[in-house]
Structure formats: C-alpha cells, structure tokens
Amino acid sequence: MAINIKKIGVIGSGQMGKGIAQVCATAGFDVHLMDANEDVLGGAVAAIGKGMGRLVAKEKMSESDKDAALKRISTGADMSGFKDCQLVIEAATEDEQVKKAILLELCEVLSDDALIASNTSSISITRLAAKTDRPEKVVGMHFMNPVPRMELVELIRGIATDEETYTTIRELVVKLGKTPINAEDFPAFIVNRILLPMINEAVYTLYEGVGSVSAIDNAMKLGTHHPMGPLELADFIGLDTCLSVMHVLHDGLADTKYRPCPLLVKYVEAGWLGRKSGKGFYDYSGDEPVPTR
Ligand code: NAD
Image (cartoon, rainbow, N blue to C red):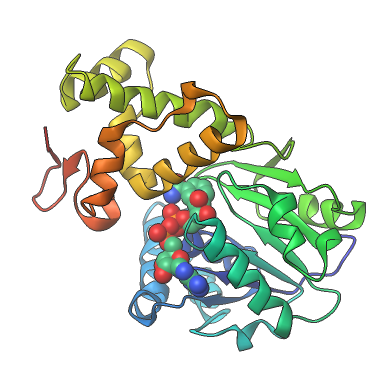
C-alpha cells in the first residue's frame, strides 16, 4: 500500500457507515465511527455485532475474530476521534451541503497527510474535494449495500486526485476483500447511473397505475431474475437517497429523462423513507412487508 493505513475513520453510522466499519474492522484495521446523532451511534456497535453474529452462525467468521474486530471499533459524536486516522471515509446523508460542511470541519482536525474518501452515491468528487484543504488526497469510494455482502467498490478520481491516493485506496479495497472498478466523475458514476433511472421508472409505473407494488416487483423478479423487485430495492436503499441521486442526475445531466417521479417526492415528503423508517413502498411494522398501495 502506498500509504500505510492503520486506523480508518467513518463519518455517519447509518446503514452504510456501519457496514463500512464492519468490513474495515474485520480486515484488521482500527476504526473510529462517528455520527452527529448520538441515538444512532448508541446502537451502532451492537448492530455491527449482530451482523458479525450472522457470519459466525454461517461459519464464515470465528467467535474470537468477531470479538477482536468489535474491540477495534471506537465511536464518538464529534470529529476529535479522527486526529490519528490515516483515512476518513465520509458516509453521511446524501446531501451535498451536509457533506461539504462535514469536510470543512473534518480538515480542521485531520493530520496533513491523511486521505479522505466519500461514499457518495452520486455527488461530484471534484466538487466535494474542492471544499477541502487537500483535493489531491480526496477520492470517491462507493461501497454497495449491504457492504459486508456486496463485492464491488466503485472508485472515482476527482480532477485533482493524485496517483498515490488512488493506488492506496485501490489496494485497500482489495485488502477488504472487495473488487474495485474505476468510474469517471460524472453524476451517479456507473451503478447508480443505470440502476436509479430504472427504480425511478418503476415508481412512474406505479404512479401511472400500470401495476401495483406487488405486480411491479414480482414482474421484475420473475421476468428478469432480479433478486429484489425495484420498489423493494428502493425501500432497501432508502427513498431519500434514491430521490437525492435522481436530483443529481437531473441537475447534472440536464436531461428530462431523469425527472424524479412526483410519487417518489411525495413518499420522501411524508417521511416514508423505506426500511430505515419502517415504511416506504412497503410497511415493515408486521412480520411480513405489506405493500402500501
Ligand atoms: P442513512 O440515512 O442510513 O445514514 C446517514 C447517517 O448520516 C445518519 O445516521 C445521520 O445521522 C448521519 N449524519 C447526517 N449528517 C451528519 C453529520 N453532519 N455528521 C455526522 N453524521 C451525520 O444513509 P446511508 O444509506 O447509510 O447512506 C450514507 C451514504 O452512503 C450516502 O452518501 C449514500 O448515498 C451512500 N450510499 C448509500 C447506499 C444505500 O444503498 N443506501 C449505497 C451506497 C452508498
């Protein structure tokens, strides 16, 4: 590895931040996990432990490795825990203003040679990097959800990203047991440029009454062998994140084909964000998810 990484910071302990912390700690790195919301942070390590427990049950991890990995994770609600990190991965809410404010604050505590990666699903790495005091040390590191299970990490260079940073992060991805694929710094990169318009079209299909939630999801599962239907997948990703990615595509590529479906907007306005809020295209309050229309 071009730069010796021992301790990795993770900003945001939502579904992605927890997954990233889990794979980094499992691979032997010390991890500091931070979230502005102390309630979320409180349950984070227990949730990671539960995730590792499932791997132990499947004999993919030993109990002692699990205990050792959990011990490598510290948590905190401010930036001070990132002082001795060689890399900080930002995985907070998909909102450009939120991410820019985080990066400004982060640079104040970070050591001069530390690297910054963003797990953004869609936002320009060049624009985020420009907010920092080290644009050459900033890279896009786009993990997939759920992080412990998915093989891919998209890597995105900003216009200023230097080769040492890129190589270091690429080697780190391999150490984490994942496969890096390079994507250029265009709105939503590769996976979400293709996936999110499909999900948005599924919401239009629902909005126009072409099919019900179950009909759309079952049609895509049985008809295209997708493991999850597009609306189920949207709930899994988070409808706020889906909408945010559609806005980035619409604004960044200035093409009406990326217009977010008004029904998706309405669900987000209602606070129906999918699995993480308990309700989206399905209601998750019972034993089985029930379609909401
Ligand atoms: P999430 O809503 O589950 O978690 C976001 C977390 O960020 C929350 O816990 C929130 O409290 C925290 N946060 C917000 N503002 C903060 C701040 N100023 N400082 C510290 N923490 C703050 O979202 P998520 O699904 O984990 O997504 C996080 C990032 O990962 C986004 O950029 C998203 O686009 C990206 N991503 C998401 C997926 C997915 O399928 N959900 C996949 C790949 C990448």
